[in-house]
Amino acid sequence: MTQATGIATAPLFGPLLRKGAISRDARILLAILLFLVLWGLSVATFGIVALAMVPLALVPVVYSVLILITVGK
Image 1 (cartoon, one colour):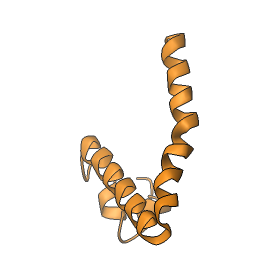
Image 2 (cartoon, rainbow, N blue to C red):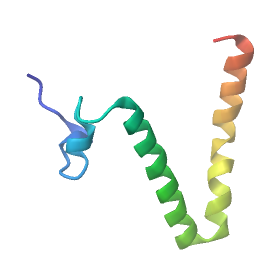
Image 3 (spheres, rainbow, N blue to C red):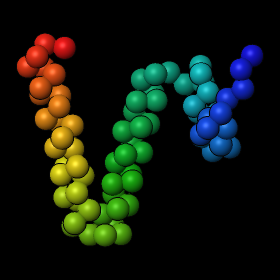
């Protein structure tokens, strides 16, 4: 049996991240929820600038996805 390492050993996240504890779909939804909560906290802390930084940072990601779709991968 292998021992878990990294964030899976943290007391807060460990039980949720261990394999088989929750489904893959639930993990994806939790990741999206965490992203939105952190984004909301950054907006509350830094104001409107933080609201604009996330879409600005995602521009290269969307550009890469569009290229991959165009190429057919």
